[in-house]
Length: 155
Image (cartoon, rainbow, N blue to C red; front, side):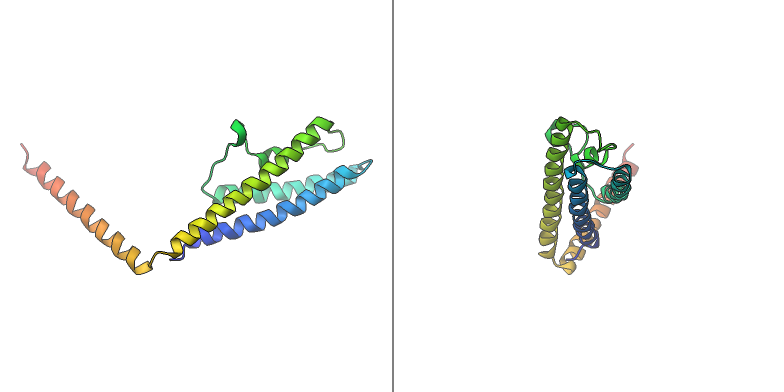
């Protein structure tokens, strides 16, 4: 059985991962320079804004919540909160690097879960699922009918 939502989610996560890797290279390029101009930082922040909107779109489309290492936010959001690269302290840079790794692992785990869901769904026959739903619904309808009859007949 093919689930269009799962297929769509897989494509969404894959495309975001590609953007995420590209964004990572832009970030690494900016941070590796001895000095960062205001224009370079603005380019980085513009790119970050695009990534943030794509992330928000993906996050609202997917059915997942994530709290890594007991933090209240996920690592992707932490990185998208970086607003000033030029004056970032060394400790903050290391923290961002850790968050990049966490984010990449997290996004890949989401992708893996979606792929596993797709594999499980492929094992189901559409006709079998239809008949199961039909008979389950028929059973539920009959139970409701019996319960309604009991309610009507009780004093």
